[in-house]
Image 1 (cartoon, rainbow, N blue to C red):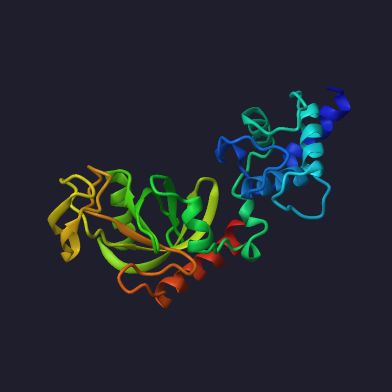
Image 2: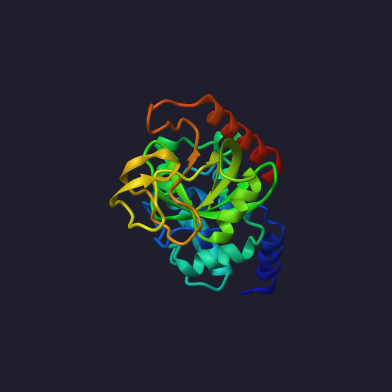
Length: 269
């Protein structure tokens, strides 16, 4: 690589502030013909580094994206095949160390209020872990999405995470609080309650059991994460999500989602 190119690439890498992290994206190859949110993330990163010249990120991997990738690969000392695999993703992430999520840049005016039914349930799939940050206290903890169709039913990963939740809510509580969820590299505005319900930690998950937590009585055991100090699941709501029992949106939950969205737009971007 020529020294001038190295210098230009180094400057671009150091000054890039695009909110993006390909290292935490999916393992799938990105190439001509691909169409996804990750392609959009890629375009935003390349645009910030000066390689992607199209006016906006489209999410479609066409000739302009291929050309931009090849130029980045060539100047990074990689095989310039125009295909984004693990090595190219790692090189991009190294160039952009202060990462957040590309969704900050172009979605819902930057507030990441993503629709549960249209987007979030597919981004944060069952079995995936996520980091949750309480907007008011700034405290974070980890959870796993284990159940839920109208919203996310989640469980703390460890006893430490459970204790952090109890510290924030001052014990178990149905209080709605604005939270920011980072799942699979995407940051999303949400609303959470801290009341474990419908589960028994000592019994197998999904087995029919008696005396489920929070007065839920007999039914399917909604407790998949064992030994975490919590019996059952907790609720996290998103834009337009609904309750399981009444199938209705709750204004109290949606107001907290909006609060989290405002926080992301003002504090995180």
